[in-house]
Length: 283
Figure (cartoon, rainbow, N blue to C red):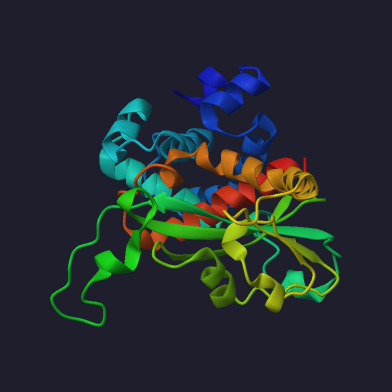
């Protein structure tokens, strides 16, 4: 799969192959061109792949999450070359302000005047950590163990503005931590005029932020009335944007399948994919 072979594809077909729009792909190429030019001026052997092909290789690795050997074979390079290409692309994209998220300080500043901000958490399964006999955390397996499907996971909490439909901030934690505890630990302080919406995992957020709205939970002795069901349905219709965000992120199997790499780089890749989502939505 090379750039010269897929650049003539229609927009929807191009997105099915790479995971991003053709316009977004070209924008990413423009962001990387200055670094690519300075790299070529520094000298050294001529690279086997063009800049477009190297970006395509990285997107293919994120989208399909095969091994570096498998990804490199598709593009006619070695396993080590595929590794260094992905690393170079990621290291240079993380410095581009276009892909940076607004950050949690924007939630409190009130400059953008977010009307409704939705908080939700997604989990990514990881390889079972090794048991350490010594050290600060002897049992890291328990640290990352999640009750869902008995897996070890990393949790990512995202804050999404429903009006602008973009990701504002991200917080990362281990699989053992509860959703509401992640919110308290992340210290995402929101402007009083901004309404917060969340799922039933955020029970108790009203004590921290009075302007909050959560769906009402049904119990055995207190079933939901028709008004409660209508209200829950209205909240769900407003919160659907966060599910659309997760649908885009999960297209990249590197953050949806079991993560095989070292966990140090997971947050960087998740942030880059979220930045690409904001970049696509603003077009």
